[in-house]
Each structure stands twice: as structure tokens, then as C-alpha cells.
Image 1 (cartoon, rainbow, N blue to C red):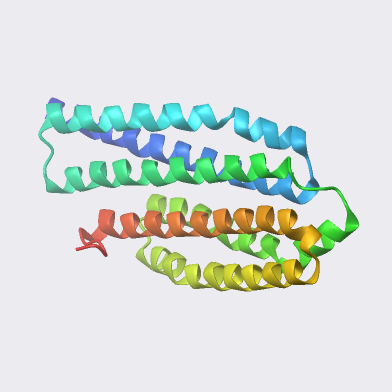
Image 2 (cartoon, rainbow, N blue to C red):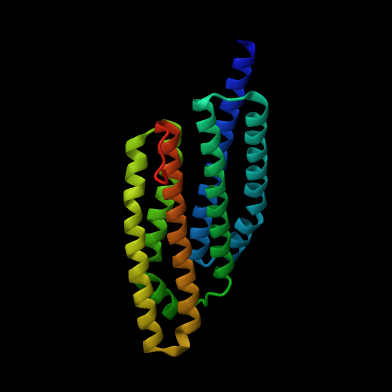
Length: 220
């Protein structure tokens, strides 16, 4: 019984570490979005500077997961949780990577009313808002073990995809209208694409939440 209690404590710690990593990744996206929307290059650099924290957490949590598998001989339910954590931290790390690249691209965006007009017209802010909410809800769904919330996150991905398609078409129109805006349009297209990818990773998180609860994954 003492060994099981110790193992349960380790699983709880693992669960809490994932939640903490998710909270930090969520904060990174929100700060990256603020840096993009306000042209705050100092904030963008702060986000990039924090990327090492997420990388360290991923390595530490992954190591703890492998150690539990090798030393505790977990039963199916416990192994499912450990496997879920391994998969989710990989997606959280990628989300952080995308937030950092968005910040890097901020340095190349011009400060002008015409650039701001284009940014507003392609509604990257709308993509960002949905993608950020998807990530936040994915962590909440994991904490609450909420299947319905996880399913709603997956369904919401179409909204991000549709906004990306519209943004891409508008940026093509911008280039056709003024070739001098080509570099700006390509930078903005990359930023939009990274928000779409953040949405994709949020879907992955939600699918792993479903797996942690039901034992079934979409890939099976």
C-alpha cells in the first residue's frame, strides 16, 4: 500500500507539472499576441527569452515519465495518463516555439498606418483569440476531465482554418495591388500560419485529453 501511495503521489506531481507547463505556454501565446498587436519589441524579446523554461520543463517531465514507466510497472490506467502527459508536453513545447517565432517576426513589421490597416483587414487578431482560447480550454479540459469541452475544442479548429484561408486570400490581393507590400504580406502570412498551427496543436491536446479519459484516440 505504501508503494502505491508513493506512486499515486508521483502521478499527482506529474499531473501538476503538466498543468504548470500548460499555464506557462498559454502565457507565452498571450504575451506574444500582445507584442504583435502593440508593436512591443521589448515584450517580444521577453517572450523569446522565456522559451528555455518551457524546453527545460519538457525535458524534466519527459524524464520523469520514462522513469515511472521503467521503475513502477504502471497498470493500464496509469500508463494511459503517463502516455498522455508525454504527448501533451510535446505539443505544448511546439506551441511555445510558434509563439517565439511570432515574436521574432514582429521585429520585421513596419510601424505605419498602412501596415496596421492591412493587419486589421486580415483579422489575425480573430485567429489569435480563438487559438488562445483553444489552448486554455485544452488545459482546463485535462484538469476537469471534460469530454464535452475537449470535443468543442476540436470542432473550433475549423474557425481558425477558415480565418487563415481568408487572410491568405486578402494578402494575395494586397500583393497584387501593390508589389511593394510583398515582404509585409509574407511576414503576416507566416504569423497567420503560426496561429493556425497553434490551433492544430490545441486540437492535439484535446484529442489526448479524450484518450486519457476514454482510452481511445483518433489515430486508432
